[in-house]
Amino acid sequence: MSPVRVRFAPSPTGFFHIGSARTALFNWLYARHTGGVFILRIEDTDKERNSEQFLTLIYESLTWLGMNWDEGPKYGTSGGGAYGPYRQSERGEIYKDYVAKLMAAGRAYEKDGAIWFKLLGERYEVFDEHRKKTVTKVKVPPVVIEDQIRGRVERVEDEDFVIVRSDGNPVFHLVNVVDDIAMNVTHIIRGEDHLSNTSKHVALYDGFGVKPPAFAHIPLILKQNGPGKMSKRDQGALIAEYQNRGYLPEALVNFLCLLGWNPGDDREKMFIEDIIRLYDLPGINQSNARFDDKKLAHMNMLYLLEQPADTFVALARNFLSKQTENVAAQSALSADAAYFREVMMLAHPKVKGVEELPAYTGYFFIDAFSTDAKVRDKVMGKGDPKARLAELIAFVATADFSSDLAIEEALKALATQRGLGFGDYQSVARLAVSGTNVGPSITAMFRVLGRERVSQRLQKLLAAV
RNA sequence: GCCCUCAUCGUCUAUCGGUUAGGACAUGGGAUUCUCAAUCCUAAAAGCGGGGUUCGAUUCCCCGUGGGGGCACCA
Image 1 (cartoon, rainbow, N blue to C red):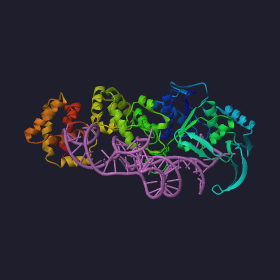
Image 2: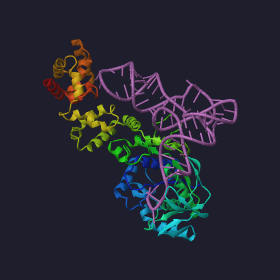
Image 3: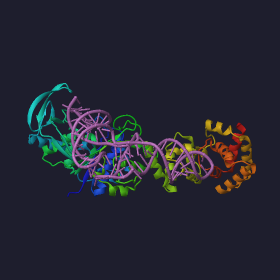
Image 4: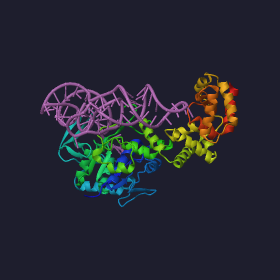
C-alpha cells in the first residue's frame, strides 16, 4: 500500500471561504490521520481572474487554521516537495507533454484551434434541445466511479470535450488530472459539485492509461439563509472575516469538522489530536449541511472560556488593536497594563467572543460612554433613584474598596439599614458607572474602576436628574 | 430539459432491522445570581409521501416529491 497523498487545489480567484476551508480540512485530516502527505496545489490557470492578493490569503488562512502543507508553494514552514512546481501557471511544459502523449495515443485531436479529448466508440449526431445545436455523441459504456463516500456512481460521458483552449491554455479537467497523476495523488477528496465532472476525469485517466485514484466527494455547505450552496459572497462565508473578528481558529476548525463529519457519538468539542485519530472517509456524511453561525459562535465561546488569562488578554489586545476607529478600544490599548488586564479578567467569563469587548468594556476606558436610554428610563423611573444615588455617593466616599467582598458586604449593610434590597442600589449604580444594565458584578466594577471614577460618575448621573 | 446526488427535531447530527428515536445549537420555562452571561434542571420539537421485502422497518428495495450539484474553449 503506497502512502496516502492528498491535495487541496484552490484557485486564487476570490476570497478564501468556509467551503474551501472545509475541503482543505478534510484533506488535511485524512493526511494526518493516515500519516500521509498533504499537498497544496494552486490552480491558477485562469489568468484573467487570478490575483496575488487572493493567493496570499489562501496561505494565510490555511496557516491561521493550523493546516500546514507538506508539499506546495513555500510559505513559512509549509511547502517544498519533489513534485513541483506547485502552481499550475508554472507547469505549462508538463501539460504540453501530457497532451502530446494523448495525441500520440490517438486520444486527442485538434478542432477549431482547440484540442479535444477523444472518446472511444461509435459516433452519431443529435440535436440538443437545451443547447439548441447539433452535437456529436459517442456510444460509450457508463463511467464507473467507486466513491469512498457515495459508493458506486455511474455516469455517461458521451461527448468529446476541450482540454486545451484555442488560446493555448489547458482547461481545468486536463490540468487537474495531469497534476494528480504527476504528483502521485492517491485520494481525491473534494466537494460534491465535482462529482459530475468526475466522469470526464476518469475518462482522462483512461486516456493516459493510468488507474484513477480513490475519489471521495464530500457534501457541500449550504448557505444559512436562502437556497443553494454557500459561496464567497454569502454572509459569514469568509475565513478572513472570522480572523478579523477574533474567532479562535481551533473553534472554527472544530465547527467545520462537524459539518459533514462526526466521531460517531455525542462528542462535539474535541481536541484536534482526537479528531485526527477518529477521522476517516467512511465517517463522512452524504447529505449537505447548512451553515449555522450561532453554533459556530457557541463553539468559539467554549474555546474562549478555557483560555488561560494571559492568552485571553493577548487575544483581547490583538483584537482591540485592529479596531482603529473605536475610541474606547484605542483608549483601552493605551491604558495601564495591569488595569487593562483586570478589566479583561472581568469580561472573560462573560463574553461569547472578543468582538464583544469594545462594547462590553468601553466604559472602563472612557468617561464619555453612551447611556442606554431605555435602561435609563426604566431604572430612573423606579423607586427613588435620586435618594439611592446620594446614598451611594456617601457610601463610596468612605467604603473599603480593597476587595469585591468588602464592597459587597458594606453595600448590603447599607441596603439592610435602609430597609431596601441590594438590587435597589445595584441597578442605579450600574447605570451610573456603565450606562447599561449588563456587565460584570457591580462590586467588581466598583473595585476596578476605583473610588474616584465611581464617585464622579454617580455625581454626574445625580446632577443630570 | 438532461445527468448525478441527497433525505431523522427550525439547524448540525446519533441509530449500522427490534430504542420511551439520543445529543448539540437555537427557542420556552425554572433554579442560581447584584444585572447580564455562563452553569444546572426542564419543556416543546423529527423519521417527506406511497408501495414493497420482513414476524418486525427510520434503517433494505422501487416509485413519487422535495433539496443540492453538474451539463462551457470558468475552476
